[in-house]
Image 1: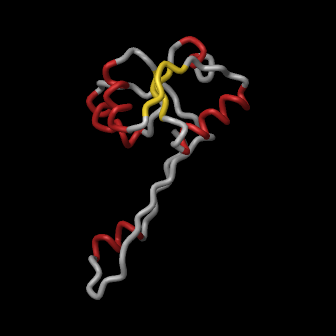
Image 2: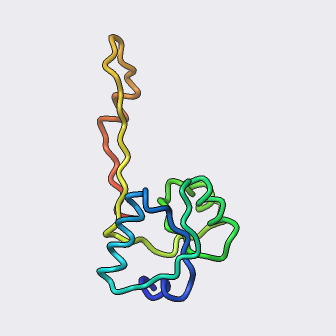
Length: 114
């Protein structure tokens, strides 16, 4: 159960360059939890690989490990609702805009926390 599990099982986390990591550290401080950080990993692809190959918890957006979650290779233990990550789509104005892109961008998807 969150947050107790974070004191018993080591955690793989993104580096301090990640907003996700900053939010995680802030939430841990507010919760009074001192997790054991096994590794800080700069690259989400590497974090994904380490998550698959270790017996640790990993702080990673579900979208990064979606295939592993769907295949049952990884299991989502819990979400931290106070931590969210935003993704932005930036497009150029076009003389002949792609109608599919317009459709996708007109319906934002809200994901509740990590």
